[in-house]
Image (cartoon, rainbow, N blue to C red):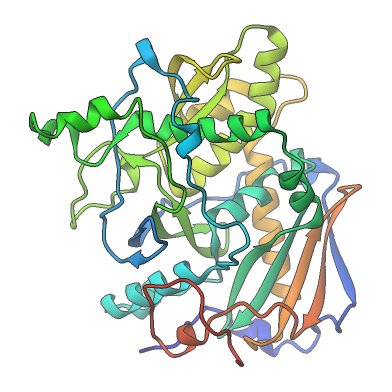
Length: 398
């Protein structure tokens, strides 16, 4: 099977662009944000290359068995705390890297006659690019790992000490509130397209109220797009779809995001929602091409009181011109310029050589350093054009 390829060409032969030495730091300044005004970088409509399912045992299946269909929750009894004692969470200690994304990309290459269709400058998770889009307006620290192989940069996120201590320090109330989002997904989805459900299937509809959630189970899409001059292949979890999938139609425009948020009761509530949550809602959905977010607004006891459909392309307009708000144009231009800069920084084409990228206090710049053979994350099987139904396995060089 063909090796993973990107589109770099003359960039690698330019002697004026030297890779940073191990531990040498280069930085990309965030401010002033005015440099990201002007014409917006063009973002190409994403096209799905492959989809796959992960079951309750974290086994991977390259099919649609975990795809869920949207069916609105019943607001007469939408208690998000129900089922919390039965909540099953995947093991946070298991380092899954970008293993399933790499396997799905290998499958996509095996089925695609056009090798260019599965080439890109950047391969990563959607969540990571979401963080980049939000950098101009957020102060959330992160650390990324990067490696260059056959002209393609692969990116993964590292767990920071800040994030680890934040998760471990959650009290009972915070853990329960973390469950509410997953429960809303359970209340809002079924395993069969609603119009095709029979009387026998309708039992599933009734059982949603008492059911819990299992975060081991996932349905994911792998898609290709382009931001400015940067081609990207990303993997992302899909909450549900509004229509059955067809092999001859790009399914992405039917995908939906499901979210929960505190009920908006005051002007301050509205400002916090639009300034922070809506930014992340927009970034997540826009990157995949998801047309809308279904948001369940809940009270302090975890009861959903209102369900609202927020159209992705309308979110930037909802905050436009408001003091202290975000600008989608700035987000996209920043990410475009940063990714172009990153391609000039990462020049050692070796899957056993990694780079570390950090964004931390005082949040004025993103730094990169060459890390040698530390935190190698590409799988050996990816190099060999193989896949596995199990996450994990040896890394390159092992």
